[in-house]
Structures are given as structure tokens and as C-alpha cells.
Figure 1 (cartoon, rainbow, N blue to C red):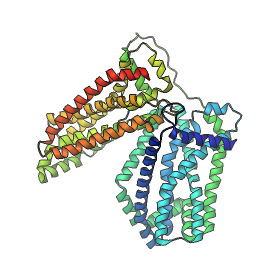
Figure 2: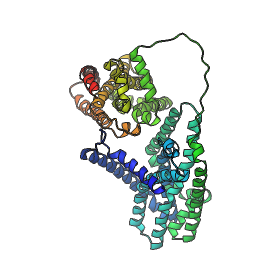
Figure 3: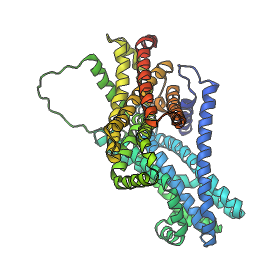
Figure 4: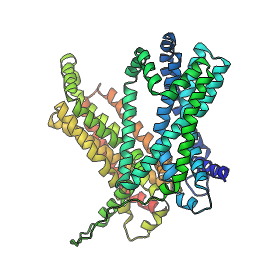
Length: 535
């Protein structure tokens, strides 16, 4: 039965990647090629970054006689990246899967259900491991080679190291599952964790050069800290470096025994965690005057509640909003540094000051191109679309309520960031107006355009809502089109300064945004209504 459960989960995992947009229809070769190209591109970029990093640290460590520290750093990076990538997958696969009720109603052992899901998480961990281990091992072998005993030990380590990640993911996933079942607004908490991990990733990427210098210059102190504080990692690294099977045995004992204990404890408490009732606060009814809303605003509230019901949908659809808020906080905190930079520019390159307002407006618009909400809202209706279509509601109100959600979610953040930028840069009223208005109109264009594309390429056969914001054709087209549009504007603006000022070009662009927004609005209220009625 365990083998059957594993096969079903793997089939479901891979079928989501090849299903078409219509029921019973497989995706065409074009979509498969596009997805294959994207996966290949991401893999090549990650492998290249890992290769560059390990190439910089291998020689200093070996010259210091700390060859084992190189493999320790490899293991630490594998564990860190795999844990960040799999902790939420573990929480969803193990404890919040959609088929929990169905599986619990069948005569299946909780242990088999648990192990089938653990195996899926383990596959993801091996993929994350490969992105780091392949470059790390390749760099070391290319420069120093390996003995047969080292190669055997390395292979055993690479097979068992994801178990360490699995232990951590299962434990933290269990903690998250218990937290989510006991608190309100769990989607916003999950969104907060996602934003936190993303922020830490961005900080690490931006300061990777400093971290590399620290790792190289403090090799001895780092080695002492790992030897004292990370018992399994130390013995694993020494086993690989020296080909020592005694150290390998100590490492395996410190990994396999905790893994067996974690799986045993989880299997014994698996049903209890799955069937834990979510605590809700009892609200005493108080009679109040009834308030009514118009049909349109009732639809808008419906869209907001639906969109905010999934943390993954919010995270993937509103990355621009996240960048708005992070940038606003960063600019406000480092206000003094910005002022110092402005003084240097005004002294050394005074003519650049006239470019500040249009460049700031362009940068905020570029962040707005990552807001991909409206291009998913028709698809998110799924097999429930017929319900709202059969209600006595004007289709135009349904369509525009979804566009309004995009505007409500994206525009306030752009206004906050624009106001802070205008204040810090001490812009004139005219320039501040440009910095504030341009992103507002651009967000309107993206919202209307995304709705047009979603009407053209809806995806209703999804199993999980996350597929709508990750794998649908409407998201891919809207994302690349908006980014390409921003790139084209930057390219044209760079050459337009030869015949006009950058401010004049920015005013023309804002006027173009307004015309485009009106054009898309007209298209949605005419052609869009017809397409909606035919869905």
C-alpha cells in the first residue's frame, strides 16, 4: 500500500506540470518546451552561482589545512537552502493536504500516509541538494581529485544528508501546522514567514561578497565553531576529507537515529494533528442597523476575501506590493545616506538632479510590473464560475470588480513609497506629482491588461490555487509583457534625452498610460463581456 500511495503522489505531482487548460486535454509541446526552458534556465543560473562561490573558498581552506571545512560549508548550504525551500511544502504536504479527509476514511495506516508524503518532500530536498552539491564536488575534484574511499563516503553522505533537512522540515512543519490551526489570520502569518525568508534571501544575495570575505578570512574561528557546535556536520566533513569511516559512522548515527524517532513520533500523532479542530473566537451577536452595499462593491469585497484566503496566492501575485513596502522602509531608515548621496551628486554631477524624479517614477513602475493579481482572478473562480454567471449580475461589474481588487492591493503601496521618495529627495510639487501619478496609472494599465489576458487564457482545471499564479499561461504572458514594456520604456527614454528632457518624456509616457488604460477598459466592457459570457 505504501508503494501505491507514493506512486499516486508522484503521479499527481508531475501531472500538474503537464495538464492542459481544458479538462482531459494534455498540454501541448509549446508549453512543455517553455516550462523545460524555464527550469533549465533557473538550474543553470543556480549552478553557476554555486560554482563561483565554491571556487572562491576551496583554495584558501585547503591551504590553511582546513579541507574538511569546505565540505562542512557545502553541507551547511545544502541544509539551509533545502530547509527554506521545503519547510512550507512539508507543512502543506504532511498536515494540510487537500486529500486528508479522503485518506483518513480509507483503511490505511497513518504511517503509510505519512511516509508517502515524506517521500515527496525528500525528492524536493534531493533536487535542492543537487543544485549545490554538483558544483561543490565538481570544483573540488577538478582542483584536488578524490580517492575511492572519499568518493564512497561522499556518495553515502549525499544520500543521507537530505534526511537532516527532512527532520527539521517535519518538526517545523508540525509546529507551523499547530500554530495555523490555533490562530486567526493564518494566511497572513504564512505570508509574513514567506516575506521574511524572501527578505533574508535578498539581503544575502546583495551582501554575498562581504560574506565570502568573512568566510575566507575567518576560516580558523569558523572551523572551531563548527567543531564544537555542529557535531554531525563536523564528523561528516572530516569523513569526506580524510576518507575516515569511523567519522562516517558517528555522522550516520547522529542522523539516522533522530530520523527514525521523528518519523515514529509523527506517525503516532499524525491523526491527532490532522484532526485538530481550528479554534475560533465566539462572537456574541449584537443587533445593529443593517448596512447595504451596491452590487459592485459587494463583488469587490468578495474578491478581496477570496484573494486573501491563500498565502501562496497573495505571495506570488503581489510581489510588487512587497517591494513597495520593503523599499519604503529601507529608504526611510537610510534617509541620511540618501541625502549624503544627493549632496555628492549635486556637487560632482549637478545635471543629474533633473533626472531624479523621472528615474524614481520609472523604478516604482518597474516594481509594479511584478503585481500579477488581475491576470489570475478569472482562473481562480475554477469550477465555481457558473455560480456567479447565473446570478442576475451585470458581467461588466464582475469583470471590473476583479480589476478593482488589483488597484486596491497595488496602488496604496505605490502611493506610500512615492510619498516617502518625494519627501526624502525633497522634490518639487510638480516632480512629486509625477512620481505619485505615474505608478498609479501604470498599475491601472497592468490590472486592465492582466484581465484581458486572463479572459483569453483562463485556467479552470487546477487542483491547487497556487497553480493559477505559478503555471497559468495568463500569468506568464502578463509578467513578461509588463517587464518587456518597462524595459522598452527605459531604452526609449535613454535615447529620447537627445531630443527632449527626461521630464518631458515622462509626461508623454504618463499620457500614454492613460490612453492605454482607457483602451483596455473599453475592450473589457465590450469584447471582454462577450468572452466572459462564453466561458
